[in-house]
Length: 223
Ligand SMILES: [Zn+2]
Image (tube, rainbow, N blue to C red):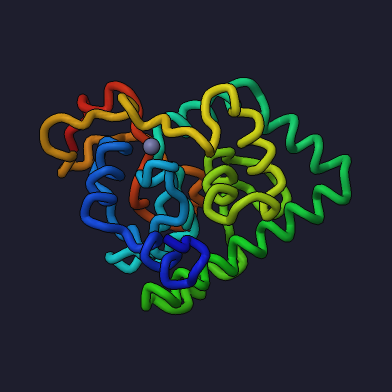
């Protein structure tokens, strides 16, 4: 295999039926409008799902990179609970170089979303022009978004996403598979939306999101 060829990259980006099933199991709900798998575990399972910039129902959707792997999402939630976002916002306020790199990450996010829109045949989505996710370009509002971006883009693109990935190394590192036991692999994959929690860093301007993070006790919802 030559993973660096464009053909190999395209093939690895394409979500297979198995990828979609794994995503549904990871999230505890069926996924919709997933057009690419921009980051994978060393074993091949998805870490991040790329959602189309316009959903099948027409809704503009700015949060392109969605962290799906439960081991990573819960590790990142631990960082959020520990107040890491406040620390990062203080860093941004006091470090011009970091602030500039973060603005560049915002632009890279917009460019990546536009490329995905083009590759998936969706084209431009003017309603979300200039709107990225996670608080970019000036604030940190959702670490899951930043980590999803960093995993999709590779190191050196989103400085705060990279920083968060370093900070979860006690629970997850890119060189090891943590999939075993990380989600329910028995029975049928979720086919009904049983979640009731909000999406990762979604601005108010959009409607119903595609996937949301799996949480315990999600089975009680039944709308
Ligand atoms: Zn794995």
